[in-house]
Length: 128
Image 1 (cartoon, helix red, strand yellow):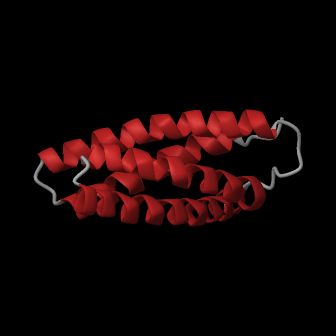
Image 2 (tube, helix red, strand yellow; image 1 turned 180 degrees about the horizontal axis):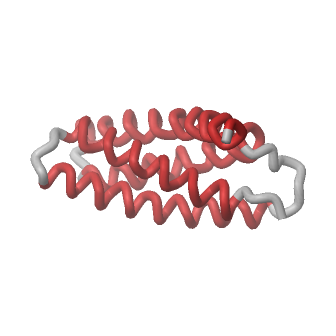
């Protein structure tokens, strides 16, 4: 159990860096360029997902140097697309409920992070 909590802490640290990028870029793109929140979040996630992959590859799961890096990267990026859809749906739902964008975005990112960890640790970065 302690190993899972420690690993989740490392995962959350990498995800937090990605979430900060997602949060700042999304709010900036909406405010500065008038993009929809879902489109802005998608663009932000393209950038942050690659950085987060390398964090998880080297720090969280220690998979760097092992076989299957391109498979893990592809799986992580595809999974990031699913996470994007999940976040965007939650963001829209929370906004529909009347939550302001900053609160709705933070909630969507936090909930998706837990789901992301569960799949990443059990399928994408699982030692083969």
